Amino acid sequence: MSFTAYASQFLSPTLVSIICPNYTNEQWKTFFLVISGLIVACNAGFPFLARSDAAGYTKKQEPTVKC
Image (cartoon, rainbow, N blue to C red; front, side, top):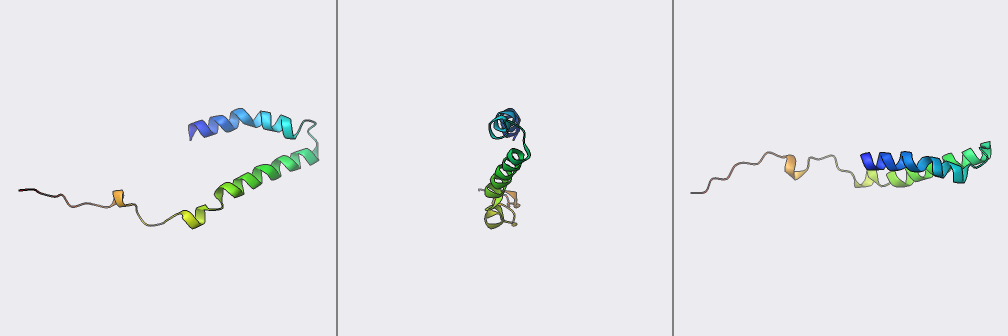
């Protein structure tokens, strides 16, 4: 998580300077549409892939006794 946050903070100014060199409204609109599209694309599968039941390692296990 920390690396992703660092990378986004490090690369954002570069991305802005490429997409919005003159800081016009049209360029900012393009920038925000690109970012919005990336967010939607990255999160689109989550509702279909996520599960609400507990993982196996969170369930209580009975201790086994060997004699």
